[in-house]
Image (cartoon, rainbow, N blue to C red):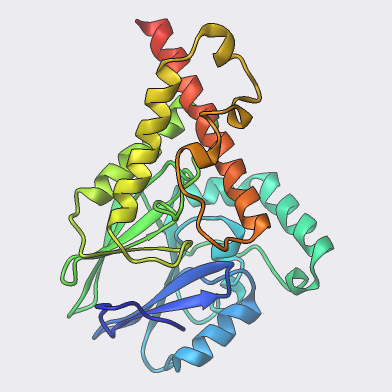
Length: 286
């Protein structure tokens, strides 16, 4: 468990080491757990630490169907309704979802008890939970994934952005112009909330400046790609070229583990690929 300066005491950050942050919100009418972490055991531990009372109704929100955000659903499936965006069902039904579980279970024993449990309730567009003292607005924010949702609490001007915002950079769903458009649009929507705090699930920050930094990163990618020749656009190793490497766009955080840096280099490669594709399509339509 952790907190940030100026964070309301009704919100608790549930931190699973460096893996992911979930969020817990207490309202007058019910408690809300936003994401269930990577295993049922992690989720149960978190709820025990939160001293979450069974007498107080619990609602669970799956922000999206990435493994580290919903594989803990087995810990809450019997006792609480699970809400997600309708697009989450498509991801859950895709054979790749089970393949990811098989692969990770073969590598780490902690995943042996994981079952792929989906939401009980889904929505399209947006959904509002009225907790009495607090309102939780579930906002569809695609781009990182097709099913991604962020949570806006207007009374506190806090956005629980999950993976729509990330430090140091977010990752677009695919190397497509449409997914790039969606993630930039979602970031702009979160920016326009004018939030007091923006809390992502990765990066351990609460600063709204992260949203602007993410948008500036994508804008810098677009501007640099606009200056490329046809042969450079076709370069499959562009992300390793001077001027297009991750560190040419952001300062890699001091002390970040090597494997985490590698992860964000891969994110950057996907983002750059999507930016190149968007540029090619813009040229064709001109």
